Image (tube, rainbow over the protein chains, first blue to last red):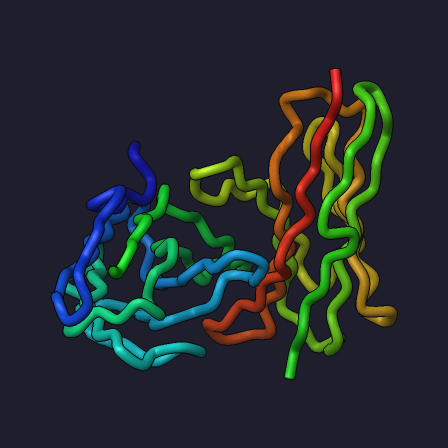
Length: 113
Length: 111
């Protein structure tokens, strides 16, 4: 039972390059989330997927796209990376079972030069 | 708009001390509040979740309390150990799929 996994762990991009961050969970959760964490700030929600087949914008969606590939997988795409997107990205999942406890992956450290 | 604040930003204590971490939020209409631990370079580990109808939750040496009327939650750590050194994050779910996180308290427990 791996929980929430993310790939890659580290990535360096040049401005304008694109990339996709992958996330998978094996807890059979319906809901999945992408957050970014910047120094001195709390985590901020980029996009979420309430259930398979649905996605919605969070607090900071500009410059990102997402795909809920199936119930297990939720990917985050940067089409044209900018230095302002340098951050640590976390994927999380939860289930609306009365608790909605969120479980997080190990994160992807992204640097955009 | 819900805002979550954690004070202090950093705390250093000697091993064995009991300590309290604070979390305050501006809107008492919450669904739940979750405390996380984050080690350097790692993801978030869920410690305790308190639902809106609850006043406290306990796990081992950890006890979290919730007072919605005053917009406060505390995380009590008993008999602190060097292994407790980490950043502790508080997160408030206001219903729906959006959770607001505090910036965290960085704890250092000296041996």
